[in-house]
Structure formats: structure tokens, C-alpha cells
Amino acid sequence: MDRQKAFDDKNDLGFPLLSDPDREIARLFGVKRIGPLPSKRATFVIGTDRKILGVINSELNMSGHADKALEILRSGASAT
Image (cartoon, rainbow, N blue to C red; front, side, top):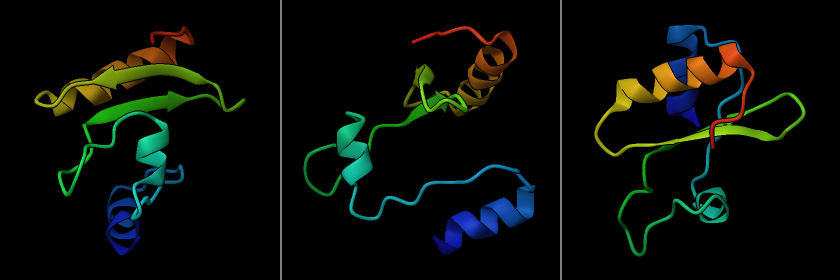
């Protein structure tokens, strides 16, 4: 949680970040890997009504996550 707080403080995000030290949320969202491996890289765009608007999956293109998430938010369309 300290790392997320520092990241938010540095970048002034304006939205909450999720800390999942037990990887329970990762399991529920289908991105948890078996054993000690880190979770799969995925970005979930969630609307104010708590519905998933889109999912971006890419292990290599991190900037693509942000670009696609912004595209989904700007269009207001679902892109799952």
C-alpha cells in the first residue's frame, strides 16, 4: 500500500488504487498465476456503476494499457 500511495502522491491520479497483497482480487479477475509468479498484466476499466467497461491484456506493451484505457473512457463504449 505504501508503494501505491507514493505513486499516487507523485502522479496525482485522482482515483483510488487497489492493493492486493494476498492476490485474491487477481484470482477473482482471472489474472493470478500459479505459485510465486507475479499476476498477469491486465488493466480493467471500471465505470462509476462498477461495471467493467473494458479489459486490456498485454504482458509487453505497458503504454498500450494507458492508451487503450483512455480510449475506452473517452468513448464510453465497452471494449472487453
